[in-house]
Image (cartoon, rainbow, N blue to C red; front, side, top):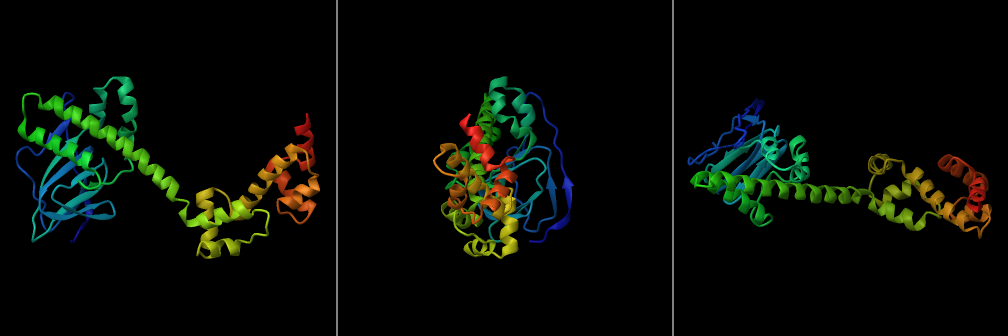
Length: 288
């Protein structure tokens, strides 16, 4: 598949009463040799009736087949290409999300407002196995637009709003997955620090646990946690020490040794750096 480097911007005009533009009864068959990438000023959804091929969306190449659905967000560069041996047929629908949401009462629109301003973190190509309900909604939208029954406009609006709410829910779930997954690269180090903060910990040892070089580990840790690995170790130690100081059962020197500092001076230095006061001052404040 050969892609031209230039990109076209293909805007659509929409009616306030019915902010949809579709391909009508004529299905579209993407060519086997693709031309220029393009983007739109609207949400584009599509349903593949038959055939196979690939979708290029931003920097991803996504293969598709009959029954698959596409979801392309405003500004995303994309283009579809059919397989030479199995040409595909699509029905695409363009939607002005902003105009559609304006039709809603304020309390219902609140949950969809973010759809107006940014691209949700959801897949651009979905199938009936992983997303059966989503694909069914898109298929129903396409069928309603093709048949144009008596109440098709209201039906399409309701189906599309349901689709937008589902996309919003998917966005939340996908972001949570990303949030949870971002720790995977440094998870062994985090587990070790949480259980062994009182031991002597070196950057080399932590990097080895994560199968990373020291420089890569240090950079990755800082990007994910917002602090360096050794600063994180000190933060954990000081956090534990503040609880021990609050309990008042141990001397400052005992606590320093308990949380992993070999000397009282190094404990005092790190405590003051993180808490802004000395351990003794912190302990006295807890008594008041």
